[in-house]
Amino acid sequence: MNWIGAGRIKIAASAVGSSQYLLDLATDYARDRETFGKPIGHRQGISFQLADLATDIEQVRQLYRYAAWKIDSGKRARKEESMAKLRGAQLNNDAADVAMQVYGGAGFMKDTPIERQYRSARVLRIFEGTDEIQKRTIARELI
Image (cartoon, rainbow, N blue to C red):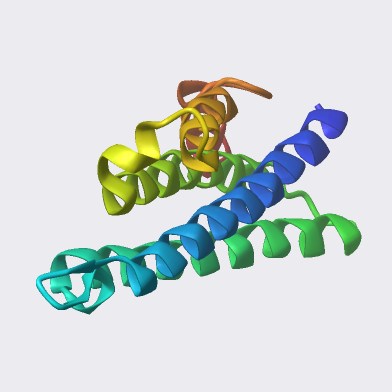
């Protein structure tokens, strides 16, 4: 099981990087796209989604770093590895969804990176153990 933990942390780190990329794309689009005379990013419906996503990204970033620190310190980190992988995979799916919402119909077009990221995000919830496996591992470590 030791080797799988490193894979789970890598998935969490990858998910954070991909989610940050999606947030950056959505933020740039929200800054540039105007409706009714002002950028859509000035509207709460968009800006609050971006703020929540930025907060979630930082939480998962800190979680996978904590798991890595525990491993580097020679401590058991199975629970934290699974937590980071679970939340990272969920985060990436949420980030793809937020970016798609901000872009609207334009995000669904195959020539945008949003559409590809949206499809790719789903597989992270399967690699190195499904969400349910992560929850089982977390629960076992707690009990």
